[in-house]
Image (cartoon, rainbow, N blue to C red; front, side, top):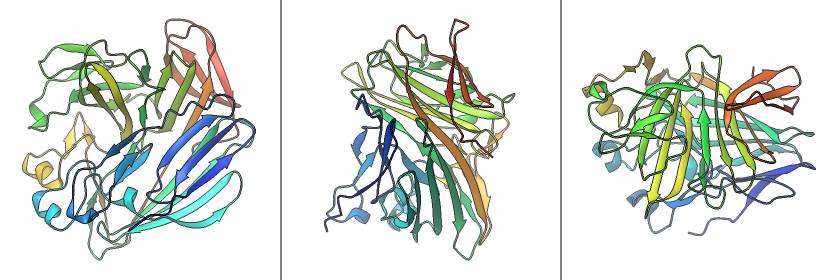
Length: 346
């Protein structure tokens, strides 16, 4: 069955953002005068009978809703998909203007419905996303939500700098995570147990690294800066909604190919059965699951922006709310940049 090749597009005089109708994925976020798209990621999904004969892909910034990671063997037999199936479903339009989009979709496999509203600032290069998830089933259910922005070439290469306000974490090895060694951002342990700087890795260190957002901050944030293109991509959210940052790093032939700038409600890249059997409901004093009662809703927001930064830039030390927008402080210097915006997190 062929799917419609159709995207919604929001734009202003500075930037544009594109969202796939099939899957609801953000697949392009560009400045009008550069055309460099950080969200160019595209990777084929694992084979599954649920896809029948169709090719399915993870693309751009996609949504992991209901779960993060692989389903259990029993769930797989019932056609439950890795990361859930929200990003494989046709979304329906509620309303649309040049700078606003309201859309919805329903996953009957996950018993979850989603309503999303996207507002593009009319005078800036940022957009606000508000999402409401409802358990449409008759029973309470375990629930996790991870935003999965993923950067790729040409924006991403071995010199791209990723920063965030993470603190303690661990390498997601898939075994009993309660016994893994604790690490502290920006460092991680590779598969050989060696310490690596995952902000700008100099050697192959493929894996998933999970961290708590700084407990002293009300906000969580993550940025990626392309030194080749003098371009900064950023995401900001309220820590109470998303207390975890998960870094997926994928190398091929000693060259970095993909980076997941993930943030969400969990750090466990495993089925709920594994969480239960290994008693992993809380790690580093943070919950690893939500529980949605029948009919219950959960709401969250985040803001994304993209800005050019000329000259030598050493990455981001801090992002903070400012009365006129967002203030960006540079690493190792006292330089500060203000992105003016009328958007805010509530």
